[in-house]
Image (tube, rainbow, N blue to C red; front, side, top):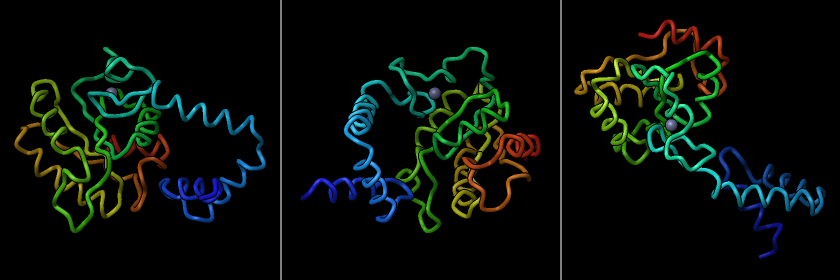
Length: 196
Ligand SMILES: [Zn+2]
């Protein structure tokens, strides 16, 4: 197969990227010149060797220390655990001024499915709730205001009940259909204030 088609197919595997956008990316690389292509290739190569997944919250970070800068920061509030769908959700929550810790689920559960472990890190979350039940006072299920987000939140709230920890959801402020990733810090701060 020729490199143009191969690269187009690789880009099509990226989330949210269709064939037309994939071709535009390849076109961009073709006209950018060898310097840019080598720079991108080098950064991609180093992505694997210079980063790791946090053993505690499961987000990706630069470093090899086992836990990320948020999880290893002694100034964070250990009593609050904010559960997010994906890494990108953490940034707007950080900007809203949240000082607790995080847990990255890795996705949401499709409506028809109850086989939760296939889509999210449910076992890992339940284990953390169990082992830290003396420290964690509240678990905030900060899922998107979408039907899958609602479904996931309901299932998790049910399964976390045995931990005895208070379970809450983000309050009004996040409009229906909004993904946390795209919410502005003020909205998140308001939704956190109104959590129930
Ligand atoms: Zn972490």
